[in-house]
Length: 418
Image 1: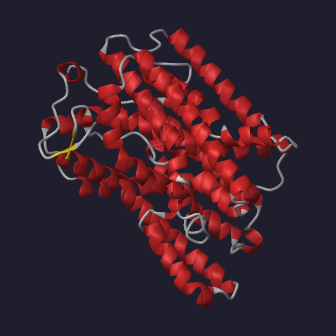
Image 2 (image 1 turned 90 degrees about the vertical axis):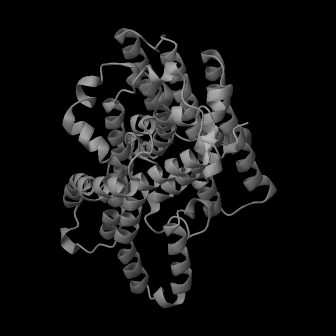
Image 3 (image 1 turned 135 degrees about the vertical axis):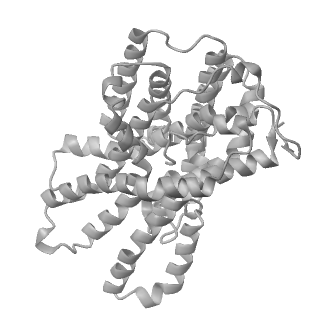
């Protein structure tokens, strides 16, 4: 058990302290790749007619969110394991939540504010603003509080800055992380036991999806839109992706502390990178099952996200372990900068997409102009990162309370969920 303690958490072991945490710039760059995949997914209808195979690849961008959730669990464990290995104190819990809030919330609110006027204009043009005003106001407050992922009803979900639902899920993950981290540190056991726990987490997540999908279709006959919002947005269902990242982080740190880092040779790392990328690409290329067999349909829906977790874990562990064939690109300073700005990109791009769907550009609203605006949004995200995200993070975080916290609490390298 990891109880809330009034006293400070136990100090990290000497073994932990003897190994300083290294920066992981290549993982930061991978955040940009995942964020850009989601952005292109949301732009796909604005880029003109595209070949079917390219559409299939672009639709695969939805799994960038799975990558964010897995990476989030991994990086939080990498950065904060020593905070909670000995227990969860009130002080360490509050400080962790404040750091997370400072990292996520300022840009989250900015994205909501940028997106709000366009939805009001849209409703006004449809003559529905007055009639829907109370509901829209309530749903806006739900989004401001980061609770929309729990409410599978439009306009509470899938309305205001739609991609921010994943941040609402991250808020829940942050609330649970200290106890999860403590439990894994205390009871995770050997590397083999953690590897088994990782596989069990993936299988458990798929089984939970199977139970929920079955219940919504055969026990309750839930409306399709509600089903979509539950399956895609619900933090409890998406939680296995985050937990898998936490287990992978514990495995990585356990091997590191034991002097037996994972994948010690670059040849082994390159082989695993290629294997993981092939597995990811093959799954994206596979069309969803739509045949008559209900059990195969249930299986396909149950593993939709789970099928990506292990390849993403393998990619993250490999890139974190040392140089790979991807390093010459991922460690370039400008790519790392784009990775640092990826959270801003993920949050602010939706307001641009909303404007374009309103066709406010008139004759200028061509696929070529839309593509230029996509590039401009990437550049805007760097400005947002430097002007809004970093200054507000520093302002809200405050000074670490202890030298150990100062050492372990460097700005995390992940998007929230992203």
